[in-house]
Image 1 (cartoon, rainbow, N blue to C red):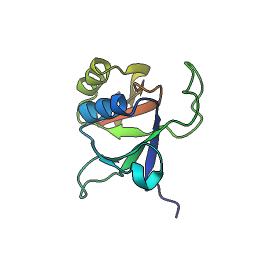
Image 2: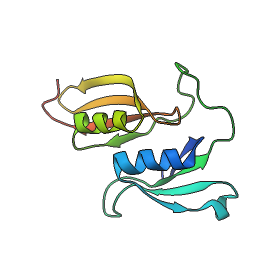
Image 3: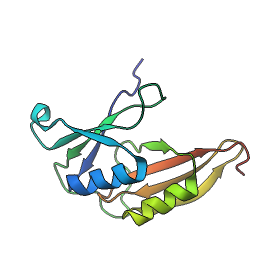
Image 4: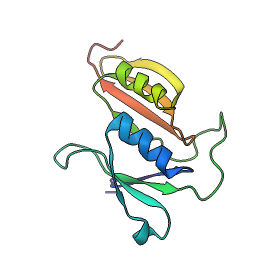
Length: 131
């Protein structure tokens, strides 16, 4: 099976992106630039025993996505405990709303945001009472 085992987020400003993802989601970073041959920070997104994957921030190799451009790759969705609290933290740290919070009835709250580097990502709070 082709299960996703790693992700890469393309960034223009590595320090700004590390600050955003570190402060909003608590990610830790390891410098893997020597192995990659470019600025590349491994992202540890949670404890080994938790469901999920780790990834990296890598130096963007071309122009950033334009406003209102369709997603031309994968959009990662991050599980959160409190949608509204996380959305507030995203805004406080320079992120913007791409698609407002909406219910996946009987399952969860979902929404999409734009990070400090122009990338779209989602957040997902499980909630059986969402409607």
